[in-house]
Amino acid sequence: MGSAAGESVGQLRITLVNDEYLYFNEPGMGLFISCFDHSTLEMAPWTYVDDVSTYDDSSAYVENIDWGGAYGNSRYFLAGDAQHLYARDNSFMRITGSFYTLIITDSAEVEIDSPYGSRAGLVLQNGGVCTVSGAGSDVTVENGEFFLSGGTLDVLSVLAAKAQILEGSLLELYCSGRLEMSGGHIQTATVRGAGVMHIIGGTVASLHAIETATVLFYSDYYLPGAGLWMEDNRIMGTGTLFGKAADGSIWQTTIVANDPQARILAMPLVPPPLEADLSFPIPAVYQNAPNMTGNRHAATLTVQVTDDGGYGNSSYGMIVEKIEGPGDATVTADPLGNPLHTLLVGPQWQADGSGCGTSRWRITVVGNIGGSCSTEVTLDTRRLGDVDGNGFVEPTDKARLNAKLNGVQVPAGVLLFDIDGNGFVEPLDKARLNSILNGIPVQ
View 1 (cartoon, rainbow, N blue to C red):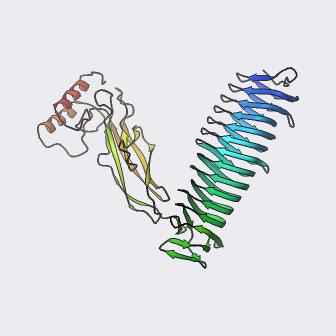
View 2: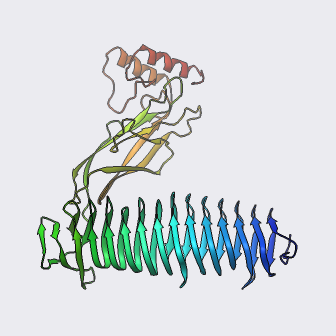
């Protein structure tokens, strides 16, 4: 379909497919438009349609609607006014107009850059991401990630989720999740439950720390006012706290509530890192096969935190990421649930050795309250049976395994003798290696 006028008279639904394009410039009361398969809808300024929905990599440039939704990697641009919006399934939505309600879920991403924004409420669920630089009413982050980079909001509620305030103004904050503030202003902040708030920059006029909440200020200068005192780096009592920002300006926060089990911490301006020891006893791993090895070949990473950095973390997490290199492995959580014990499981056997080679990995340890540290390791992923790691499975590997079985001293280096990964070096490993050398497919 080429450029066309919308058919609203006697037409209740328009469906665009297969790269079709529609320029809509007619009255659209009672009309529903759906876009599929890389199609594109463009509405003329000031036009109105009851419902516009996008799917399957399609795009829509929307003016005024009642209902709208972006699904399935589609792109949605709202310049006018909407009553109810929905974004999900890795879609992208940009709003320069206004809306009454918006729900963001299933890894959808929304940008709001408008002096009008939300007139009622915005909810993030299940991994949604939203950035706001305009104005709005209420935002609830249930399970996702929210950024305020300018403008004003009335109320922000951060539940089991993450939020960042970069710039802008917020009248009320309710946090039982995790929030980082590096700029902007909050009039009243209430942190409760297991909520964590990091105040790295910006200003907070009044603070309520309730139940087991944790609030961390970052400054190189603190002055507790009347009613406040310090116990190590913990701020006790209620009153006005003064501090110095990175630019040298003085800020103040009135601590209105500071429950006995809550923690308000005075941290240095430069956040201290955690310190941890990494154990990586055998930085090499074989390929795996469902029957021969039972997918038991794995390199073990274990971390022990030696210095908490003053955050008072009650638990830690471990993030393992591949940086570069041809060697493959699958990051697998500890089957016993230890968050500081991770396995790098060798790839499935391929006769051509694909997935083998050296690779670099980054290991990062993070605290549930704050702080992190990271290091890098090198992993050698080997063909199954490449005992000495020279890149080939050959008679030399069999000779080294024979020597090990016969109690003869073997050369120094990382030698992998346990072919089937059952935890023992035994004649069965020699039989497994013989079958590989004889070209028998590994099962």
